[in-house]
Each structure stands twice: as C-alpha cells, then as structure tokens.
Image (tube, rainbow, N blue to C red):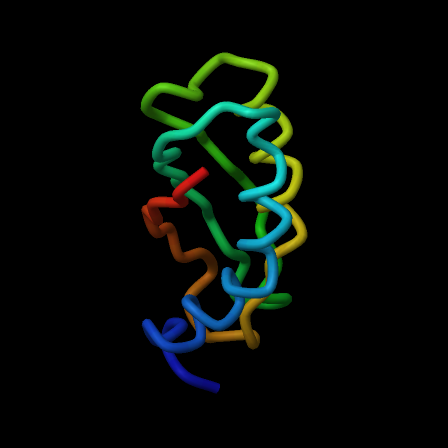
Length: 88
C-alpha cells in the first residue's frame, strides 16, 4: 500500500462525485472549497467541511453529503486530509 493517496487517485475519486456535487447547487453558482478526510484503512471519506460561499447553507449540506461517497484506494497512514475546490 502507498503511504498516502496520490494526487491522481484523489482527483479520480473526486471525479466520480463531481457531477453529483455540481448538480446540488439548486441554481446557485460559485466555488465550494471542501476539506475532506480519508481513512487509510478503507479509503472512504470520514469527515467533510464546506467553506466559502456555501458554508452553513442547505446547498453546502447537500454538497457535503455527495462528497462523503468519494473513495480512494486504501493507504498506510491512518488519515489524510485534502482541500479541493468544486465549481457549482
């Protein structure tokens, strides 16, 4: 197993959920910066924080729910946190 997920595996994992995230805007447009933490043992998302113009909004909550379904291949370190901007 790699020590941590590579940039390409993160982009690939988030690419799967990007169309869902983009569709959660409810007519709103902008950039949602997402801080997400992946678990090394499973590659699943364990925590999501939305910042920027969608923080604390219903749209932000929908975006966070969609991002929680992202995965990357398992890795060695217990957790890995990354910030990623989504255009909505």
